[in-house]
Length: 89
Image (cartoon, rainbow, N blue to C red; front, side, top):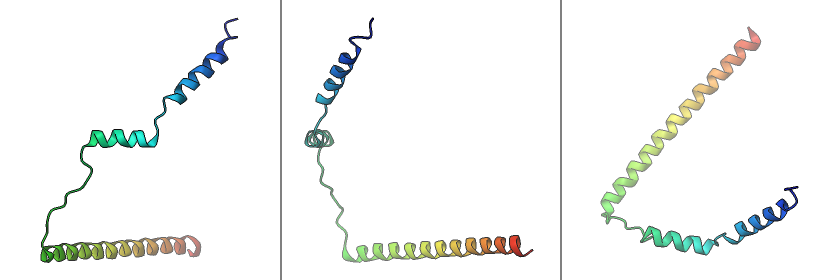
């Protein structure tokens, strides 16, 4: 019977796997060492250019919001027309 010692081998293998786990601090230290510097460097921008960038972002967001609203309205109209045609025709 080769099965008699199998459960003990499984327990030993599982115990060995549990002992190899790294803690969060160890993983973070390994990552930071591999990544090099972690601080971000931003370009220096004049206040006028920054205001221009903000206005451009706001304009594109407003256009995207209008497009999304239009799509929702068209889809709602199509669904309502489909329901009307389905039930009242």
